[in-house]
Amino acid sequence: MAKTALYPISSVDNALRLLTLFREKRPVRVSEAAVALGVSRSTAHRLLSTLEQHGFARRDPATRTYLPGPVLAELGLATAGLELLSATRADLEQLSAETGETTHLVVLEGSSVLFLDSVETPKALRIGSRVGAVMAAHCTSAGKAMLALLSADELAALYPPGLGLEQMTPNSIATREDLDDELAAIRERGYAINRDESEIGVSAVAAAFRAGPTGRVAAFSVSAPSTRVDAARVAEVAKALERAIGRGATR
Image 1 (cartoon, rainbow, N blue to C red):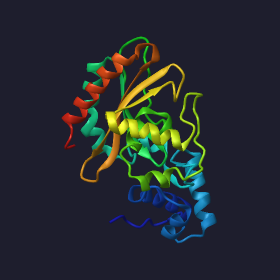
Image 2 (image 1 turned 135 degrees about the vertical axis):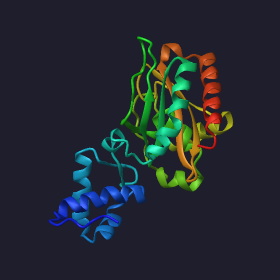
Image 3 (image 1 turned 90 degrees about the vertical axis):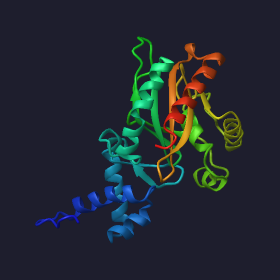
């Protein structure tokens, strides 16, 4: 049990309680934060906005809820937790060695993805670490792979009918209908592909899995300059991803 501070500062105390709430419930709505802290909605909104400003929280534009921010990922306190980081590190390193490319551990946060870990290839021309980066899920291979594991109801909650999809590049998926078609194809082949959808000149292949007893959705992705990613290379990387996930199937 946490000790009670001798000289508590209410605003700091509430901010720290909000960070704890992220661990217990994700995502967090303003109304839920207000109830948990015993404050007004306006006060809860100001606290969450302050955390967002400093990178400890981020707001999902689709659902208007709050999620842990990139600072927490950099501190190793991201939603997937240190156990997932520890359990997947060796697989991530081996995956990079097998493919000769940069690999990433990614988790789903609302309609966005959060990059928790990366292993960079030593090649001079490479994709760098993305640790702490937050991107639109439907614009990344890892995000699409994880979305393909969700139920229809879970998808509808993240992407309500009529909602326009953010495009990171002209190649990004722009409509819910196109996203549904893409997810159906991913379920059939078992992996997702990103060709210049999150950044021009960058391609990636990813596969998703459910980690640990909670069934947390996560994904491994392999990214490289698009000039090195043709159809044959995609097939090779997909097999390496399958092996990586198979090695840690019970993580």
